[in-house]
Amino acid sequence: MHKDLKYQIGITLIDGVGDITAKKLIAYCGGVEAVFSEKKSALLKIPDIGSTAANAVLSQRVLTQAEKEIEFIHNRDINPLFYLDDGYPERLRYCDDAPVMLYCAGNMDLNRKRMVSIVGTRSATTHGKKFCEDLVEQLAHNDVSIISGLAYGIDITAHKAALRHGIETCAVVAHGHDRVYPNLHSGVLQRMYDKGGLVTEFVSGTRPDRENFPKRNRIIAGLSDAIVVIESAKKGGSLITAEIANSYNRDVFAVPGRISDQYAAGCNWLIKTNKAVLLESTKDLEYVMGWEEKGKKAGAQKKLFLQLKPEERVLVNLLSEQNLGIDMLCLKSQFSSSKVAATLTNLEFSGVVTCLPGKVFQLN
Image (cartoon, rainbow, N blue to C red; front, side, top):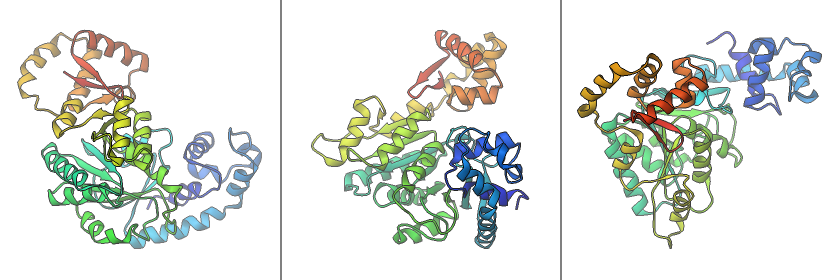
């Protein structure tokens, strides 16, 4: 266990301090342990830190609770990930409101090359479940991981289909590791631990209360390259996940349905408002994500590569691995955002790259 783990967990337990504020505290103080040794007068100078939060830091009570959580983590063989750790999911790390801590159990790679989240109504129809099963089966050859929320309906259908076809699958939940919700899915989760597992930002003892689910949904959105919505009413968690995914510049897909169907309303609305790409088959997702076979293009791309400017070659190299947004291209290339934007514009005019929905770039 990391020597700072007590402080890493402790800062997440301070009332009134969310993930964004916690990161601000750590940045201002120069480290997570330094937060708890700072004077109150200095804490109060930090933006968004009031007396209540400062007193909670000074009281050190959260550190006692954190020590108990460390014992729980150790006994349950849970892997804690702090947002600055090397193993923390790269896709999620660069979302402003990403969790300071994640608690992971199982055998999974949260930085896998291709990650797809599948969400939908708990009251899934036979048609919706069949579409979900077929989609997962057809995605198997793309070497993806499937993310969902272990809920009834579409979620559990996606997890089961992934297990059936040997695909790594991860459940993101709205409670601690000391329980499974719904309990009926405990058996499926046990099978997932061998090839996948469970992720949560919540400490043990946290119940699956209503307000925790939107927080859970941002992790489902942030972990993935693409989010697929299969059946949703006009309101619900799936639409929240889709909205968050759009704010993270992720590709969102929705399966259309008849206008008279209650659980087609949400998907149809996403498509109608250009918040999701219409998804009729796996081929649609593969096309938009650039996961189609590119062998035929290799020769032409090699010639073109030699004609590119050095900064263009860097971006083309990165996009040859996977589709990326501007933020990730800046991070991986170490170029400024203005330089990346200008280079991408030149590459677009030259027909080398295409800007996909969600401001993600694909190598042509």
